Length: 441
Image (cartoon, helix red, strand yellow):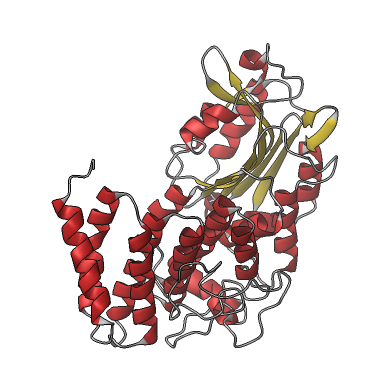
């Protein structure tokens, strides 16, 4: 019986290096170097599981059917599976199908020498949920990039968790060394006191990789939002306790670490660069007791880096990184936890900084409603969220969007007796005007 149990749990790691990404004779992504670096990471650490596992390296493969055979074998494993792919994405221009370029793939030969992306999904589609991770460190060429922009992501079965990055064409590469994202993933595996979950690793890797502007980060914001949150006390919280309590759930309030100083109680005001004060030192560590226990993994605080990205105008990168961290705390502690509320506040202010007042209004209103269910109506955090929502709503010029967001905001404002009554009156007048005026005017 014991041998059967072990066999049922057996895992697999499949590492695939496609063709190198080269522009003007300069190497931008070196898949072979990435595979070599991953090859020195112990398989149980790489896979995130102690079960007996097989490892397959495919470096320099030229026949897509050879890769398909290895992929099919890996997909048949009964236990956890990690598939890593690095290289160049291109398109079969006749069929407009994405392919991973293998060694020797050219624009003319891609239909015969590239690995069709749909093969990956076909082989992994039938695997049970929760057992399959696909890790990507890719770059798209000029033919593939418009299609990726059209998709907004990379197609994958819902049972597969996909993490990774796809760099746009023409970026400044890192030479023949290990790519930034893969290097950071490995570094986090080495330096973390316990093996973090894949979502946390991904968030840390994205934050430290100095990705080229415009990089497609997977999962996308929409895909992260669609994932079910993990309730408190389940695997994520248990994992935090194993790591010295850095991510352990707690019932008390939290202090904000440097990066969003002033907190949600300070409402965004017109003309300010950020509602939370000046940008902090990017390399500053989080002191013990100053919000570190609110961070998945403790240690270096990602919020200064996120804030620096936003103030530099790199809003999609800042938002993607914040969403990745928010998704982790949602899974670990639940949507009503102090940690989740805090990251919703961060995302609300990021949206304000990016000029996305529709999203900022929705997020600040949601934070206010959530806090009001657990705090007194005159709590500074509740009033701060409401004031932030009101300010962003007043900046929302889209009449339809403003009319849609107005009723929930008004309900929140009416529940706060300490709020300046003039704010409520003006908000009510604006909503009446929006409802009574044709949208096209």
